[in-house]
Image (tube, rainbow, N blue to C red; front, side, top):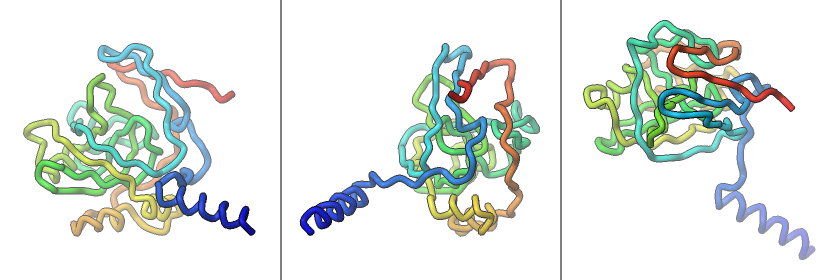
Length: 201
């Protein structure tokens, strides 16, 4: 009985401390494997996509637009600078996340569909032009933000129980459900960044 009580206590403490993690939904694809970045800012730097959904971090956000508009993202979708998506180095692709500009309190919900930023500094996320405008930092280019995963919304989206527009309505903004799930493909290469992947063991 004492052993049973101690087990329950450990589980309760783990839950309270945030140690219980929610595994990323769905089968693993190419964007879930470790990858190496080589560009003018980084040399042979490895990144390891996390296998769980929980995430919260504060850092710098930037945005990317015209030079990438219409090109493929890491999961094979066509990048739309007028949509509400984001690039993150390690979050599971299709994670639904809330990004808050800590300087003005404005927030927005976006979906991760790309990898980056790979700038060798303290940037933790790249947003679309539309998202940057919503957070009111598109003129400055950079902003200090808080990024957190919306776990229930991510799970519901992965199970096709909600559309991205419904998740984004948490912002009390009417955002059309313009995003659809795409088949995972190998990261697209560009002229500035070389991406290599570790093969499965």
